[in-house]
Image (tube, rainbow, N blue to C red):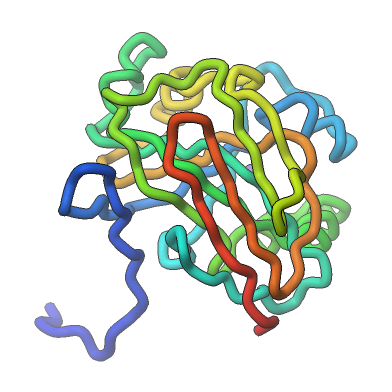
Length: 232
Ligand code: MN
């Protein structure tokens, strides 16, 4: 067996946790699709109430609050999606909705950046969404607040771009609740501490441009501020 790496590769940043000096190490990033009815409608989709569905993003593509996202290559329509993020803090496999609260480490504000033109092309051809969703700097995340200090309910979720409100909603509008998403996902994966789950976006998604300043907020959580940098 090899004893040393041939070269260094990018690693995910440690995520800040409010009131704690140690950082939250990231294992995987799962994202829920179409979890707010108003957003599904604006994209021309209906909600499939049978089950949620997911895509993933690379943890090395995380940008912390205060950072800059390079405008991604290969797109002319990069969109913002503001989301509540669940940080998993205990192993979870085939757990019930009732058990889900016990595996949540905390919550953060997140951005699911999307190359909408590439996602739409993939949808049209019934191909995977990876090119549209999974790329460098494709996920923003703010500081994590411990689950003991935050319970999702009717909190407002909002995104401004250059101080103009673009997206707004309430966490209670989620089609699948936080415990339902965790329970469902745990049927298909051994969730582990370090996993993140982006829980879907309210309506109002739209394009960003180099030079834009995005501020995402969820009432009760630390805001997420990112700048959009020059195109790659
Ligand atoms: Mn999303």
